Image (cartoon, rainbow, N blue to C red; front, side, top):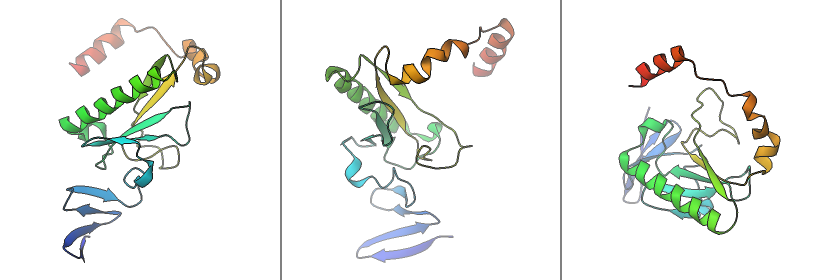
Length: 165
């Protein structure tokens, strides 16, 4: 159910856990930490924001989020994708230039099966993690990655290729 609220000359539509702003044409989710960033934004463009991850995995661990509340990656517009990746590339270059890493991991997780928490937010975001050869992430998990990989067999290759074509 929606209700109308009037605030001076601004009329917004109240939605179950948020509201539609007629000026920005965006749904603002009142319980979403990435819709209510305020002072956490350290860089932005038309469609996206950059903030530091808290908690973080590495020093310089940043998050790039669309300004609009989006939960599924395929719901992004082309403009939002362009703006998000422009910020990701900018953050990567600045972190490397500052010596915070020799490389960068960029990750996006879509896990609707997890409940929202401090470690799982239902607002699409990309992690930008500065990395070095034997950093903390490597020492606690990635040194075991070889055990996770399996050879791609011909049957799986054919099935997944057919699916994705």
